[in-house]
Length: 236
Image (cartoon, rainbow, N blue to C red; front, side, top):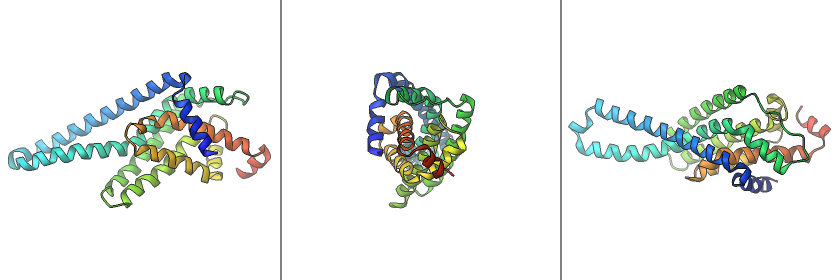
């Protein structure tokens, strides 16, 4: 079921109906990354100037710039999950509506979340994701454990955020959370797929749109798998 959903989401991501949203999503993601890069580089330059590294230790100055470049690359990679969630909040309803119309034309359409509520939810969860990933960044250089912590944390966070945002088009947010927990194996597996995308440069830029399409499919297929009474029983 998850493989079918992932293949359908990948097809949808590059399909003509979603192409305009894809370009907007890429543009917004790159814009936020550029702002983050600008802010971090200015912070590093201020730190170096304020501590007079260049005048006292020119070799260390060159080394600091080298490490800063690599460190910035790593830092931006750890920022991507939070940025992905924030960008997804902007385009959730437009993208989900297209997926519903093209792949589930016989199902009742979802109801868009109020834009303010959707963005507040996305920003709140993006902030939580940012804090968790900053904590994971602290142990980045610990062999195996650093990467494992990044993957495990984001598999959970991305599965929770993307599934609940998609499911909230069809049911109250509290019920969407209950459904996620009832089908935790499937939703976490979908989150592992998204977390895997996060560690691949360039491919991680597609995560917001792909994640929306994936979780719309996952929610739809889970809903179709069980009759309504059985589903309600699982959610209690």
